Structure formats: structure tokens, C-alpha cells
Length: 260
Image (tube, rainbow, N blue to C red; front, side):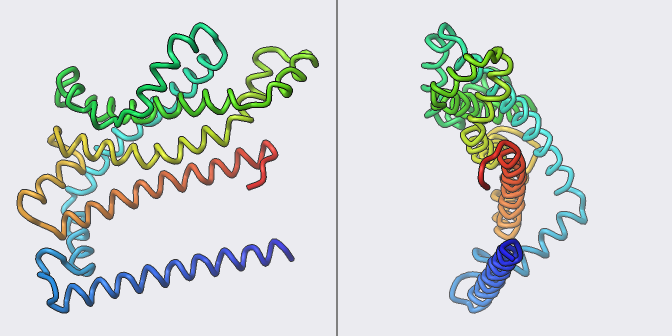
């Protein structure tokens, strides 16, 4: 009965969300068509979606989208995995903690995009520029959150596990990482969206391919409908990544006994 009621609430929430989106889209269409603002500067959604359709049919959007997707996946996955590995090593080792943690903490509050000019000089104008930017965007927050998650575990829990004879590997696999999961997934969800934004801006600033390149071309020709269509694709991709990690989080946390 409770499950049925919970499902009904979720269906109702989704229905309300869809209705609000539909109303907002209709309002946007009416305002654009009313003549209150220039239709060239504020095109209606019908024009935007038609432009999106033309970009898909021409093949240019898919080509550039998969270029950006490749950069995001390579940079994000490598950054997230290495970030968690380094986070565990730093949390485990006093020497690594005293030497590396201050660096991680300092760069955790430094905007990744502020490093793009340096990356342009060091790496050049190629795929690795965007991949490196996404890597840094993912690596530092994941390392920092992994360290923080492990350090906030109750020391008594660790002491009990050691008293019961848990090895260092068992301690890591069964106590430290499971207890740090909420902190790790919090960073994963945040950086999943930031990875797309970082790659997009890096392409916009310096590269001649990807969704960022399409945006700079649309800006140069004042194609506002194309610009909005690209922003829609970017937002949808970021949301898709976040939703993926939300579902992954629910699965992992439920497995380890967290309430989700």
C-alpha cells in the first residue's frame, strides 16, 4: 500500500512538472510572437526546435556532439577514477596527506576555466586541451570529497573493525569507501554537469570542433535560434549525466544500507 502510494506521488509530481514545462513553452511562444520583443533576438520555441531539426538532419550537430561527448567521457571518467584513487591514498597516508592535501584543497576552490589559458600554452589547440580541462574539473573535486568523506568516518567504527581483525584492504572495501559514498556521489553528480560546461567553454574559447565551435559560429552570424538550440542540447546532456549518477547513487546506497 505504501509503495503504491509512493508511486502515485511520483507520477503526480512528474505530471505537474510536464504541465509546467508545457505552460512555460506556450508562454515563451506567445511572448515571442506578440511583438513585444524582436523575434530575431528572442525566437519562439517552434523556431528553435525547427532549427534543431535542421541541424540534426544536416549531420553537423551529431558530428560535433559526439566530438564533445568523447572529450567529456574521457576527461570525466579518467579524472573521477584517479581522483578517488588519490583521495583514498591521501586519506590513508600521513605523508601523502601532509604533502598533497594542501595542494588539493587549494585547487578545489580554483575555477578550472581559469586554467584554460595555461592549458592552451602547455597543450595546444587540440582534443587534449578540452580533455585536460574536464579532467581537472573532475579530478580535484573527487579527490577532495573522497578525502573528506573518509576523514569524517567515526574513528570508533574503524577501531572496532581493526579489533575484529579486518585487514587494510577489508577496511577500505567494507568500511571506508561505503561510508564515504554519499560524499563521493555528491561530487560525481555536481561534476557530471560541470564536465559538459567546462568542455563546452574550452571549445568555445579555443577549439575548432565540438558544440562550442557551433556556438561561436552561431554568435558570429547572430543566429539566436541556433544558440538557444545548442544551449538546450547542453542542458539536456548535463541533466542526463546527473540523472545517471543519481540512479547509480540510489543503487549503491541501497546496497550498503542507506535510506534512499
